[in-house]
Image 1 (tube, helix red, strand yellow):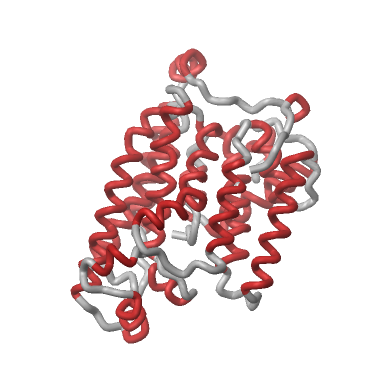
Image 2: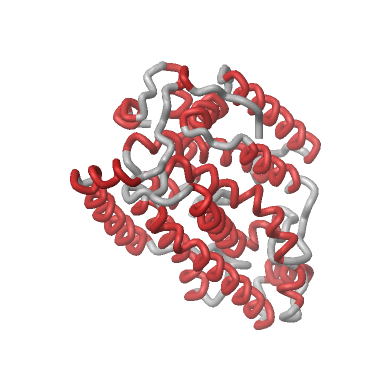
Length: 344
């Protein structure tokens, strides 16, 4: 975390600054696409995004770290401990764990509904026992907690030029679109974890089942029926991106370049998957570095224009974002709980 970002966000207490810096480091290491887009946000809002991502990354690692030798029972116990720390931190803001301390501070400053964090942890816990989904509707219930709430957490930080309620639907859809993209890109790795996020009814419509996917992953063999099933999942994912697209124009103008860049880069993963003929069971598709650079430069240009003085004056009159309030003036009450496998 740069001193400039912390100072701009009004974060001065040394321990809290260290907590936010820890979250930023998690973001930089694990979420290349996400971190790149975050750099396009106004400097005073980056700390909050790092805190939200840091919490999601921590919980996800408890569940999915392939390098860990922890048993399912041990992972469940770690999630329970995390839930207890979260509840305590959101209640009194006195957490000793850096990620929880930064998250509690961000939730307070931006009045983020605590239920989003509880819903997120509930989906993480289901990953310890649920290994597949029967339908898109079944998967959607899981993704409410694992993805949609990420968009809803972000919305108060980004700010809107419409009512918060109007922008909530597209924000949730964007979180889901990002996660669906990850599910398609990482289908082979998820199978290695004993998990499949492609709904059984969707792949069955193309003559595919889990056993056939595992066969392809194990042998490296191709099957046109698998390609058709993966293409159908990609088509569904693009539909969700279209549902999310109107939300970009509902955001605070200075936040739009960040989210637009993430939108373009993530949907670009679908383009890369298509260009590689849906070989995701055998290798991970990535957006070429040159393409990432072009999108990033475009986002930077848009961000600079949006931050021009004339635009700033207009924003002060129209934006309905919840601006950060001093911590001492914001009570933390109650408790409530993109991005799986982000490192694109």
